[in-house]
Length: 195
Image 1 (cartoon, rainbow, N blue to C red):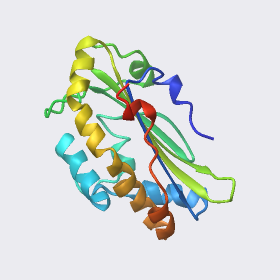
Image 2 (image 1 turned 135 degrees about the horizontal axis):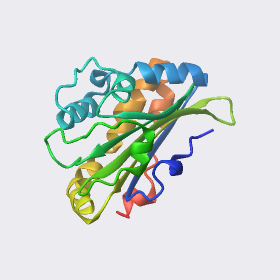
Image 3 (image 1 turned 120 degrees about the horizontal axis):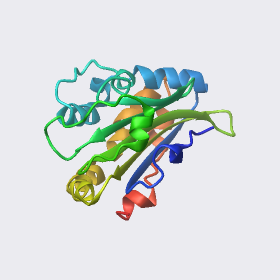
Image 4 (image 1 turned 45 degrees about the vertical axis):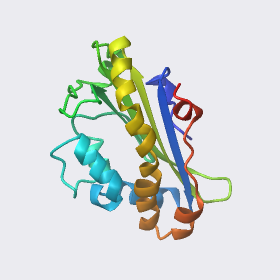
């Protein structure tokens, strides 16, 4: 069952979702997803390291989403939801540390955004598993919306890397090249129309 992301970020200005199916057991696919390192996701890994300087290419995405500047908001055996706050449009590492999930939910510092990263595996009706990644971004105020407008072209031009590099690396981890080649990303209308 997918996590209820509206609990954390209901009014996002940007919402991007990717989903790929694999011929794998859900737990096996989740383990493969947790093992993907930044270097395994080529261009996505490079982009992440550019935006968050100092990360090792050997760092697993799972480890990254569990350490500052991220904060784990929710997890279960097949789900990890993390949050980040700050000015994501700057090249400075301008991401304040969070003290807890409640601080993410109530974050209201002027000129910033809240970003939610959710990754999970769900069984499909035909006995396979689907790896899903959804990212949401919500500006706190007008200044935050202006900053978000500055980074929107980067998000629009690079969000496909999540599916093409990141999710595909997880599928390779379970030996499913068929799923990697046939599945398509599913960006939401919110992202596509700039809502």
